[in-house]
Amino acid sequence: MPAVKKVLFPTDFSELANHALPYAIKFAKIFNAELIMLHAVTLYEHDPNDPEHHFPSLQSYCSEVRGAADNGFMVCIEQIGDAGVKVVKVIVQGISPHAAILDYLNDENDIGMIVMSTHGRSGLSHVLLGSVTENVIRYAHCPVLVVKQPEHEFIDPETGEVHLKKILFPLDFSKDSLKPIDLLREIAGMHDSEIIVFHAVDVEIPPIYYTTGIESILQLDPDLNERVARKMEAMVGEKLEGLNLRYEVTEGRAVDRIRELASGENIDLIIMGTAGSHGIGDFLFGSTAARVIQKTVCPVLAV
Image (cartoon, rainbow, N blue to C red; front, side):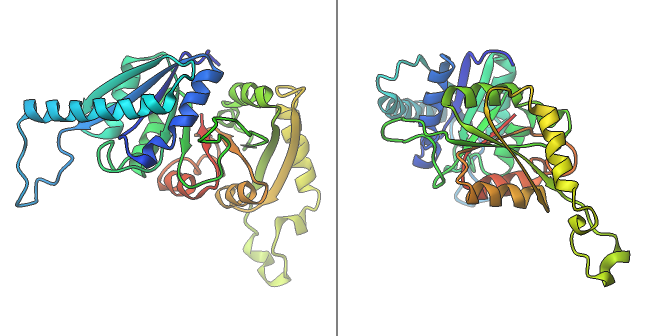
């Protein structure tokens, strides 16, 4: 994985959006990277069907927005304080928040990571909820760390201390699900984190067995979980050699089991690929992505 030279932090300056700022600061420090704070301006964020709506003068509107953005940046800079991180302020315009973010990414190819919130007010618009987060994750050329408030935190917002004890790494045996492995190794190695390598066996029972009382694939193949665990170890054990690894296999839908495991194990961070075969592939695509990320109990780093 290329070195992370720049960390991008999109914000609309709301409290919820700025909840991700400590994570952006910390990852910029971890990678000795430049922190870019980005505010996106969309010209048509109000409803033109409203009888009271009037399109503003472009010049006065942009001047007003930039003035407000400067004030918002100052609040962020005060929060950053003397963190030893180089900070750059950027204001971009676009037809939609995610389009503005992605256009900036295309122009700045050395962005190594995006850190963003899933909530905010209209401005970085319906901010990073639903389609905005989903589109950024889907089309960004770099990892995206998604956080929200409230959730299980691994960075103390007051002190900036990192408590990254457990990382969940879902694996579906596809090449895409292995994409995060270098980043996983680096982050886990820095913080001596336990890595839980996880796979959900999602196999439907053939209808012929419905009347026999068989409800689980494990009733037909009791050794299945053990074989899957051995396959996971063969696939990633050497790549993650020297780290604290645990292998977990459960039966059911990957989306549900990931959320259950994250809650039950007090997982600090989920690191996973954004594409894969059935199980993880449909996890981070379509509307499922927004639902799981919004409801999960910890930050998700999508690669």
